[in-house]
Image (cartoon, rainbow, N blue to C red; front, side):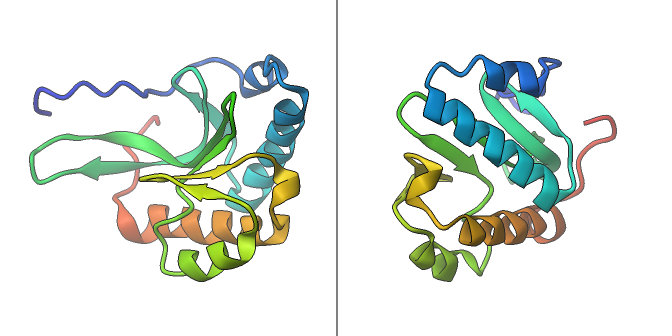
Length: 147
């Protein structure tokens, strides 16, 4: 690895404990629904990544610069202003699905949703399914053992 320090690492904090401490009641309820949905769709048990990201599965990346590491394959974070969803926008199917999703915003690598009531959850499940498959099977190498 080069001089880059990987700041978002897996932690041992229980996901249920993290979700139970989300202050905003709607955001907490949405996090509970998302946890069930991501578990069911990915077939993975969740793991906390850093202090606030709930991740399902992992992948290994390595850039031409030599910087490498592991990251969550798909997941979410119930932030104060919105739900941040990770790993759902790089697959070829994403643009067509995002057109049907409902009210959302895009970031560089994130999908932002104010609340689940604003989106079509069936379309969201398709985004999770296709995004997780793309990240784990096509885009990146398998995760390092033990992650």
